[in-house]
Length: 413
Ligand SMILES: Cc1ncc(COP(=O)(O)O)c(CN[C@@H]2CONC2=O)c1O
Image (cartoon, rainbow, N blue to C red):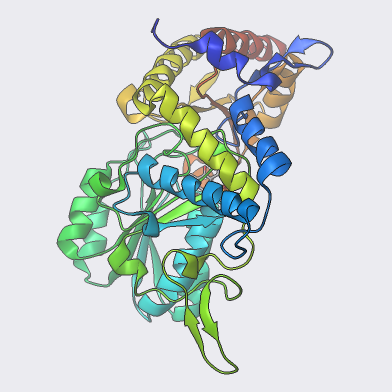
């Protein structure tokens, strides 16, 4: 669409001018793994260390006030970005993995017991399966799955069956699959869980960077996502918890800042959200997270999603013409994010990625931390191309040209 300032956007990402493999222009199509950073984010971090660096929340000198102000301003930006009812419900964590582990530890241990069921789905990332396996094993609870159909859509009648047992204590799922791109029927899940009085955790790692997220409209109780998948540095992300639940949760880590008073044998906790932010946090990268949100808000999440739908639709069409290609997931573009996983007949994905890399195109080959899904697809791994705000149709053309080369090399028909 003409209004989308793709050239100005690309100029904001120095790394996109790189060449690789002997002078070939970099075509970066592994955004589901991590995204590149605009100069606005890089400069925000640089400026913080050059001019405002101090530890936060404690000292009274001006530098510390500036550092605290920058850190807490980032929290306000995150709260607005996900339409949280308040800033106190936003906890900074390292990323989605830590966010989900915090819920499993601080909420799960106090609320899940023997015979209880935690429901998740077949297409989850390991960070939304393994913490629940650990909790279930420790508590004598059970893990249950919602299966997917051949198009990667969740079979919600299975959720009904699990809920009918009356033993379900949590339903936890990805709003968008990082492998299939499937955008799940969150209204269908949340309405069923609300009717059954069961809390919902949404893994928003793949969704939050790519579509407007409104935790109030989603009707979830926990929402986890990572900064590095949305133009921000690694090592910073956020967990949103509905206040009524958060107020009842015990702390995750003990230490400085999360306390009010420490005596030899008794300690009282700090207010929300600081009760869940022990120790010196990742201040500079949090400031970078805020700058990334400013950048995305500047583009507008509706335009981000519109651009990605256009690129993904174009990619699906062009890739369908490549010989020997199998594409996983739905071709219903309104239910698919900017992620395309695919395989070539019996060519190992690592061989495909290697040949494609030789043409300067960076895609991912592997199980994408979703081995339960790989079992379902009956493949050890897939190739995955994933798009973001700076990708172009020319990037897709470069991908398809390199995939045609794979088809020729392996004489695929
Ligand atoms: C859906 C989903 N959930 C959880 C995570 C874990 O996030 P952190 O690693 O930031 O804690 C990821 C990361 N996506 C991975 C990262 O590498 N390749 C991927 O697809 C993800 O895509």
